[in-house]
Length: 289
Image (cartoon, rainbow, N blue to C red; front, side, top):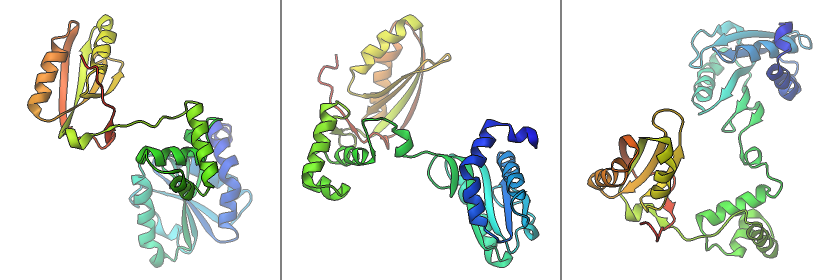
């Protein structure tokens, strides 16, 4: 275990949440339950660290659906579930629900969750939490600025009075914030087309194109009103394209006319779906020749 404590992620984990977990357990009988397989190292390290400071604590494990849990080990105790990462939240929800279903029967006093990385803000204890505060670490922006931009992204005609009410500032302060953001070119207020009013479906294209022709094809497609997403990729299929259309026939016609006939294109795989969930609006392109 000495070697485990020498690992930087383990050090950060203990340093970031150790004291808070110790406070949560208090003097109550406690149990650390690490989720299989990724939570083992963090669960074991946290248990060993707490064992030096607290005698009435045990360690056990389970799968995220509650299977393989030794129920007698959590009976009458405060429980801490430990995992490596919360990505979609499915594992978190399954494991918490598995223990909540047993809570009354096993007289579990409380259940909390600890993880190294929390990507959607569910854990009670984490080293790193994915949120606007951590995502936008720009000196020019703070949380109020981000809230203002979010409001204007939803309704570009929102008045300063409405913005001020939403973000709990004076009208003058809200106006000054917007003016400052515009002056620094940190965001822009523009008109956009509502996708669902003009299109009924979307298509994803995976294209294999010669390296020398790749930039020329991107320059051509970027001008097309139908195109709303272009990404260079590694590998054989080195360009991803997302497009909008009214009919499948429109998709087929566009792919044949604009993509497969382009010099240097070797292959194009096409996947058709509904109109995109994101984005719901697109900018008009007047020069789409």
